[in-house]
Image (cartoon, rainbow, N blue to C red; front, side, top):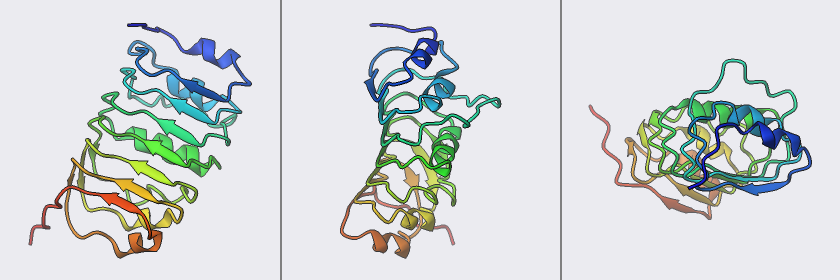
Length: 183
């Protein structure tokens, strides 16, 4: 298994458009988010099962961020920190037009923030399955007007499915049985 201690070498590939680094272990690299955020022409990033570090550095800067990123797959990394959702939200807030987002099987805990999805108008596919997400499904997910596939299965979500998701029809939804709200 290939292991990388630093992703800084990627920052020299400024014309990089698509990369799949799946199964390359980055467990000692704490700068991968900054490096990826600063690749100006990146369209597709797949880093599935890479043992990525989850802490978002406080010095993370989005100034040179790619606005061309369309595909982001970080499936199965054990990103058991909800700050990954903040990072993705910030990427979309600066104008990145994500179409495909897979954060499944990471053990991401806590609620899906009500603001998650506010800037993801071009998102077609969202997979948050296999995490530790809990609480209600936020109605802000209905702001993803282009959404055609949503997978929230294998989480601890509860409560009703927001009616705002009906705006996205027709689409495929996969949700585990939702635990009833406590009265």
